[in-house]
Image (cartoon, rainbow, N blue to C red; front, side, top):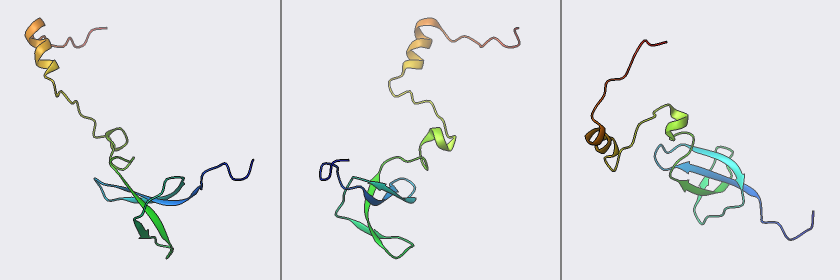
Length: 88
């Protein structure tokens, strides 16, 4: 590798803003905020909106978001139909 062309890759603590869970990893991102980790060292702190700790895919809390009324619009246009069951 050429020297001096790569960004600084260093330990960083990421915090999930929804759950407060923190994890230590390595990244090129920087921050003025720091936090003391369990090893007694201070690391840059990066607060993010979503991590595997809060994302519905990883937590199993899947939900359908219908912010524009698409289901209701579909049902008005085509009517509400019961699901077929037990065929096959």
